[in-house]
Length: 341
Image (tube, rainbow, N blue to C red; front, side, top):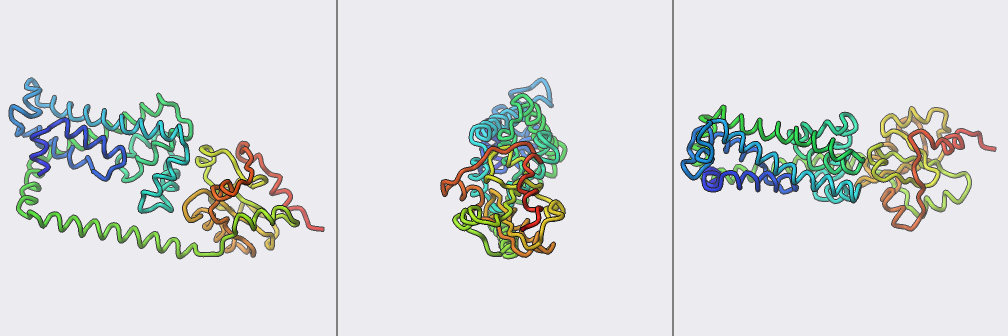
């Protein structure tokens, strides 16, 4: 069926498929690129197809496919970049709600982005799920539009070019695969449904296992507010990643900003019986719960994540304060290290 669609519609189908995938729809475009490359190189589109448009060169149809696919990818990606620039972390929140790995989807993208910066866009389309999240992250963290455009265009050309080249180089193999699919008929749909069900089941089980491992008592916003108004005050720790703080540069007043990894080592000298509250802005307080588990494992007796995180604190109408540069909010840590009297 896909072969017939490509023969009939050619470049418009490639453009639409790539654009819709880049906008976030579950319509993989790589198979279309591979198949289009195979059909173009075997000149099976006839007078109404790609080869008839470029009779002078056997490579021109392949170049045309790459140009059309890259253009579509840039259009879709630019929209996500603008949304990230305009709405910041709210865009990531919406995307995570649509993800089957909503508890870890942003953290995974931030890991890549924090490690490689905007350069990750050059290869993000080869990593399932990363491109859709990495692009709004780039917009939300203030990456320049020219830098984004260069890296994303490079990634789009590499991605579409490799797909089309693979189809052209292995046109005979692609044709045999299509013949096998035709022979299987409706059985292909059944196989696809089973594979999809197994994939979704595995992802669901990973999520259930993670949440079960992080099951622990949370502290409510009202309770934290009361504790902050009493003595001794708890130590409140912001465990968001640097990229998330850059997108939303505000924190609970007096909170200590720490790197998300190795938190216990950063609290050397803190009394182990001090009340500690960790918070983040991720679904199910995953980062805050992971930090709390790490602190408990290192001997801290009274640690709890904040239920709902920073979003719940804001929703309750409590004040937040602007974040200074990393490492410039030491007052809470100094107060926690001071001996009690």
